[in-house]
Structure formats: C-alpha cells, structure tokens
Image 1 (cartoon, rainbow, N blue to C red):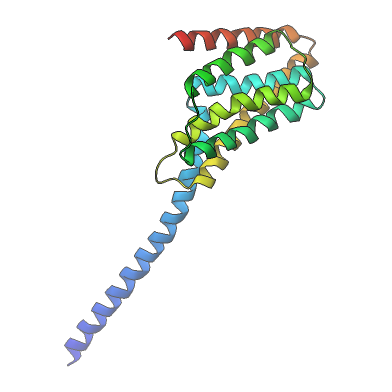
Image 2 (cartoon, rainbow, N blue to C red):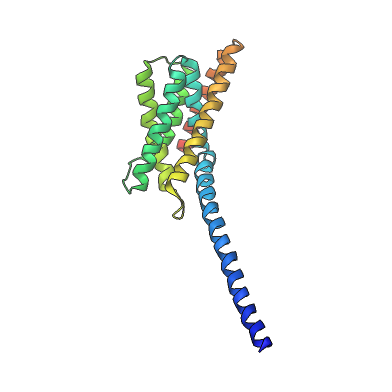
Length: 199
C-alpha cells in the first residue's frame, strides 16, 4: 500500500511539476515574442543602407533648417512611416516602394546638399511622402509571427534614433561653423542613392 501510494504521489508530483514548468515557459515565451517583435522592427531600418541614409538625411536636413523644422520634419516622417507600415500590414499595395525608397535617398541627400529652405509644412509633406514608402517596406517584411504593435514601435524608435543622429551631426557642424560638412554629407548620401539605384 505504501509503495503504491508513493508511486501515486510521485506521478502527481511529476504532473504538477511539468505543468508548472510548461506554464512558466509559456509565460516566458509570450514575453520573448514581444521582445522579439520589437527587436525585429527595431533592426529593420538598421539593416538596409537605403533606410539608414534616408533617416540620417532627414535629421541633417531638419538641423540645417532649424526652428520648428528641427522636430516637425522628423516627426512627420515617423508618423507617415507608421501609417505606411499599417497599410502594408492591412494588405494594401503601395506602388513603387523600392523606387520610392531609393528616390528618397537621392532627393533628401540633394536637399541637404543644397541646404534647401522651404516652408516647414512643405518640408514635412516631402518627408512624410517618402516615409510612406519606407513604412510600407517595413510592414511588408514584418515576420508572420510578430506582434504588429511591438514591431511598429521598434521600427519607429529606430527611425527616430537615426533622425537624432542626423540632427546631432548637423547641429555639431553648425556649432563649429562648418556647414560645409553637412553639405558634403548630403552629396555623399545623394550619390549613394544613385549608386544603389543603378546597382
């Protein structure tokens, strides 16, 4: 009797332990999925030279214009990019995505090169129009298992960080009285966009 009771208790203990382990693993896995979704989104803009160049160019351009453009242009880009991502995830086709991304690198680089000063609303509209293409690319390449909100938060944060890099570099050049550095950066970005387009 004592032996069968022990076996019964061992079986129950093993079952309870197994449930505890698997339930813990399930909770950990759910958290891992959120972190994985966020990191997938965060790394996507970092993984493509075209994305990197365009994001930094937006920051450089905003820094060159200063004033309200310093925050309005990058913010317009991030918001429109998230909208573009949402369109792609919803299954809507944004035409000429790759061409739009490459064109954004060339045009934004040229705007930095020329230190083009336009009304802030026009600058925000230009940035937003190009951002739709970048967002559509991010959304179309979202992993099937990813959480959409976490993924979008990841690529939005990465983009904002790259904008800040561009703004920081632009302001640094201005502070040291060498805006030519910003213009050279713009020419390099525009040229890189052309190379990527013909490659």
